[in-house]
Length: 110
Image (cartoon, rainbow, N blue to C red; front, side, top):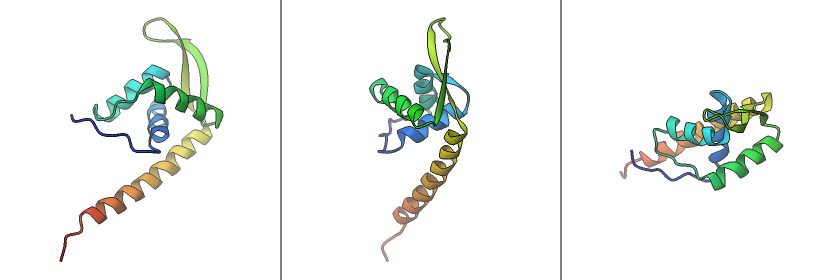
């Protein structure tokens, strides 16, 4: 699948969605985003970890230490109640904006 460009403001939404599917460590979040986008979006680690930190400090992600699939100590992220609410709100906003843009792009010259 061709690579898509990550639009400004969408990384947090994608992280919240990925984590909503089950707790993941940082690199697992990155892989899950690639998986759920069919490989169309690749997130750089340099962008992912600051975003995870920001979402944690906003109270949207909870963390705990665990063991990754390769037996390494890793910080796992899960959604808080506030994170689930933000995901719901941002998903609704994104869908409204996408619908409006798709509608505008579908208008033909008369």
